Length: 263
Image (tube, rainbow, N blue to C red; front, top):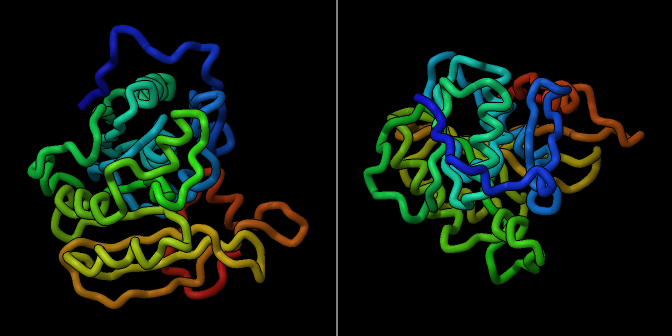
């Protein structure tokens, strides 16, 4: 499997920056003024327990931060990444080449809502996603089209996103999503159909602060109760990253089954 490469990259060098993730293990070209990857995609990748040879679908991959971090931790994965925005898809392809992972990645330029119902049905061990966080009615869109498209739902709500993931997962395959904590109810509702072993893993900004993000994971076609995990404290009182958060941001995996506050 290889990434298709367009004849002309529509993203000019002046419009992008090249940044480093995982302490320099991942090089990421991303828009200078549009959506820019922060800690969320890195922590999402850290939460995926992917093993060598497994198949991963990244829905709404943007410039590729999630799947590139996954591949840095486990190079022997096979990845299909779907992105609707032509410029972001072009950047994802460029980043595949930049990081030397062309043999294991296919970038598909498509809208999740427009994929055929049987597209890659049952073809993946994992589906990962860092979808747009806000519905149109609650959003104050950025004036920058790329940032607005990445942050605000446009025709694909949370339930549609999860429905697509369910069709693409194999039996007992795993979905892992990062989203806003205040949309947890919308995230959990569609997981009642066809999923089990749901784990909600809060990301606490600091001790004593409300969680702003959650990582949610679930398995297709299995039974098991929902579990609220202790979660991860991102920052210590002095403002620096906690030991576990820093390790995850440098490429270590996150254990969503940890039985105590992860700091």
